[in-house]
Image 1 (cartoon, rainbow, N blue to C red):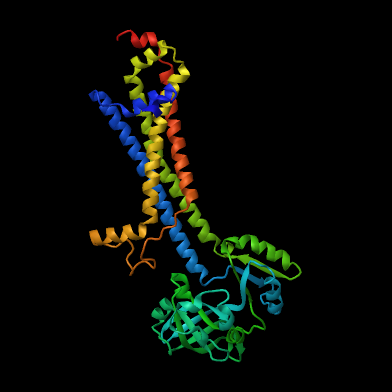
Image 2: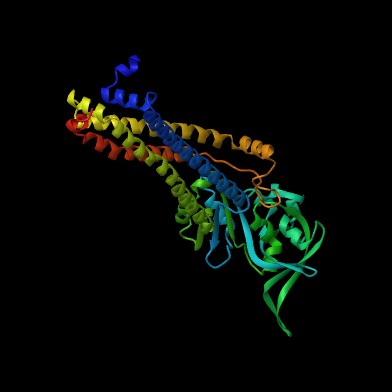
Length: 422
């Protein structure tokens, strides 16, 4: 109580109005509406934090799975081949942020087996160097990455692609190259039989169904290339890829190369995810806005109920500005309390979603993400404190804005009119 007695009287009265409501039915109803408004703000804030954390988690999970196969930065010659790739790799590795480099050959082909056919992207790699830039070697479910030796004509394919073609390790598949060769009978596609020596699972449906690895020497032979297509680069911090790509472009300015980072290679996907996150933020923020502006009705009813109190305060010397502060304190504190409760609950759920979701699934006997439908069978969560600050700040601002009109109307109360019928 000593703490409250040291507060300015506007804060004291505002806190008293926030805690009052036990003496009459009308006051209890106003308090009930105020509690509903606080609960609405809390639920809206918590829902927005949880949803944004789950969306961040999905984005991080998919991005990490993509980058386990894709390079952080890709360097290609403008003419389609990089004959001096070793010199380029030496120059690139001078950058302290570069963790490793590896050459590659890439081309499109068809994989056939009996009456089955699938279009694939064939990537020729050096197994000894590929581990410097990707994690695909650790994703093999059958066979090994080291089996892709020169002149072996072995091929490694994704798990889903193997299922579609009904092949296992040791089976033969035919690689059909669309760039044909001229024969007396006309232009015919080039064919080469490969042995499936490995099956990997990247965890990304596109890669598991459309990507195949062979030896870089075999790739140059079947695609009739004189040199690797380009150079793959791995960084210590993939988030710095756009800036480092610009640095490497300047470093290789004397060479006719194109430098692309992972965000540009998958620009459409990342743009779609960012748009979805923004729209979800706006939609769920409307829930908080509705709850915050419920404070308007609560404060309007409070002002109507407390007109006699306002008039007495005015006659005792309180200024219209002080009256306005009283109701702004009442509404703003309700919004702040609701926001704090929502932030606490949202952060708790986001940090423990890996425990809470399985508990709910066991309790009700169903699964949010069935393994036979979704590649990701558990809800990932990536709580970002900047999102929490942004959501909490927006909620408090909306709550404050909701207090302006009722507080202004309270300041305009005429003491004589208010006390006429008292």
